[in-house]
Image (cartoon, rainbow, N blue to C red; front, side, top):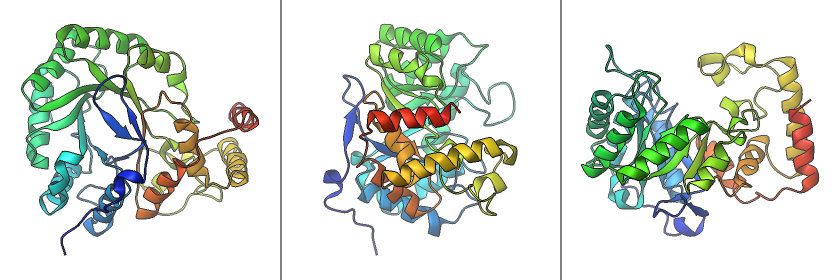
Length: 329
């Protein structure tokens, strides 16, 4: 039976604008970094996409190297678009990125025009799309002049291969330079994607102020610190958890000190009537400078948990103080 989207999806979630641009994102977005590759089951990840869209989560975030193997998340997403979800293409924001290692040789990563153009062309073919809504430079390139990387974002927007330009993993000083170049070229940067969570607060050291000053949106990735900000690791490392099977979270990161903080945060979340994972997302969304929180998911329930988080983003001063006290202990 063909998929039909929920008729009330747009009344189910909030949306925030990226600065003063026309780009509006749901406060929760779905990333396909893990669990959507060829090593994963379509019977598991396809329902997650439909569930997200039914909840008004219309933004799907990919990158050239997502899988595994690299590229397979885009291929699988493209297949699901072709099989029915694609009828809603004009309602979706679909983003992809290039910057990390994708193929052999000097033009298989970083930020040269050669790599970025070739990567986007490959991504469009894998997804069966004529354009993406956002194309990001995934990380700064220490060896390529920033003007080249940013002029390439300008180029692909002018070619119609992307509608908006974004950057990811840029520190404040380099982000400001990128914003200035893109503004001068006539293709302003509309969004920045940094890693941000209770356990990773680097964006508070100048980046959030920089995006706000420049009217640039901000979408936070890894809001649960690769799963640490859940109750998953309170009693050890479960066999099917990310720490047990994925190099992005190493078992030695789960120290007794970290578990103690997680336990205290978990108790605080319970006092708010939330799961820890929900509170961690709510904590990010309390700041209006955060346009959207980019979640990962390995099951449909994770989508619902993140959705629940957006309904309770108010924190008392006492709660915020308690959270900071726990994190700084």
